[in-house]
Image (cartoon, rainbow over all chains, first blue to last red; front, side, top):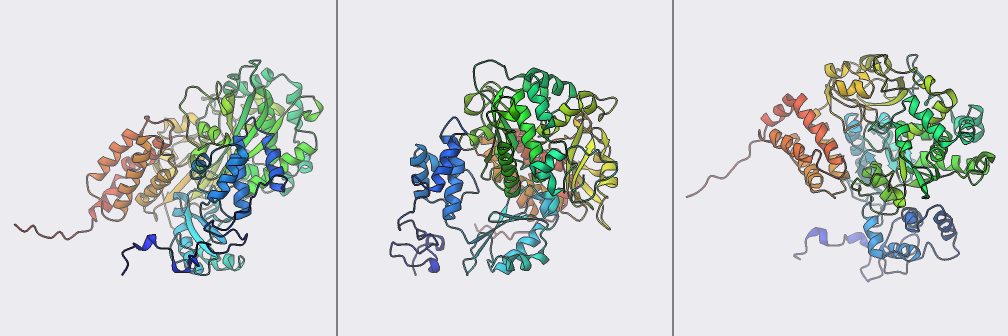
Length: 195
Length: 438
């Protein structure tokens, strides 16, 4: 038996460990070994968008959050290469950019499932049965546990702090979509709409 | 307007009048409903005149602190040669509060207009609306409204043909409760981690980009066009005869275990008991209200008897031992494990602490651990005193009030509902301890 603790080992389904990582939709590879495709290359649509944003602020650094959003929209997450690219464009250091990325919970620092399901379980929703909604999502997505990705790689379920729709308990955010008044009974129908 | 319910006859609907009306979100629809008349008027007035009207109206900040808006605006010294900025705080993340979300969803132009007037009044050419990252639908609505306003010449270098520059931009956050704190918001806007700053310097002296800045809540700014259109006296029709310090209407978000959750707009000084039973419909079938938090989860929790005696304005809630806060009314009924809900609230703060100050970083984490231990049936009789002591050390000792906000519901919960905590502790699990062998 190896003495490596379970949580240090890459899961068996993480693909080949030949240094190439495994393929993602954008061809970049999850381990970042495959060439990173720039999002903000000079002349690209995103770069033009960013340059336009910069004119709205007195400093270049102010568009850091919007630039990171662009990377996440294009690549699904913010890799170290993505941070480095943003740092170069905005004349910051990669370490500084990582410091900012790690502060905000909505930037993914690792690839996430296709449908990233966030369920509000803060007190007001909790009192209205949010935990039952969590359980229903875990069951129907086969994620079993919070933070896990489902075996088919499509879903991940996490609890999230107040989504600001407490009167419409329980709100659920799936990627950029916001669904109100979710009950356990509605979960199968919601998931069916995602596939 | 109790969206998603129909407006109740006892509401005084001003800001929420067009909730649920999709046409109000478009520029044409908003103009038909009297939109941008106030901005036109404001641009023909001097900034000082606008500040005077807002001061006279008695409008106070709706984000939680209740600072007089006109006074705040008057701190912005005209002609100091520096660029001024207006930040609109749309980072609504206080659990129990969802009024700004509805304002931005249904009436985004109302906010654009309020921001434009506010910016002009404080001598700023640019206003930034800092919206929380999770509000995807309100974000789209606001972005569209801004685009429409620029295309129609309402915003820009020659706003409404007056030759004055008014820019309004929206800036999306990325998931951090603390960015609703005004100095953290400014840091985040600048592209930094959202750590609150030490005050002084106050934002009016050195705010965003180190320039004089005013930060106002969404609901505050949305009230301004109405005040300009109708006058300060009109706004003061909504107040208690014996309390001229709170004026106007206030939006309350009602959530938790109640018949009709949603937003309600009532005049200052409205009796809370009528609000709970008449407007919100009282408790669910076969249940009883147990505990009520009237102003977002950061304010003291109350028993039903205490809460019912409140009059709904800044002074009324304070006189009764709690606070108006952000107007997020959270109701727990007798079917809830209150200790569990308070523990969940503490976990929220532990998660959202920026970890800058020791008292907050450690205090929120330990409070959560102890409370969750009690909920799991592993509490000890000393725990409650420990929690109160930790809470004391978390209050008034940090850069911002997140730490205090965590201590408040815990301390008030223990003081008001000590029996609930003790009942859980008494049910303590028995752990087998191996006997000591000599």
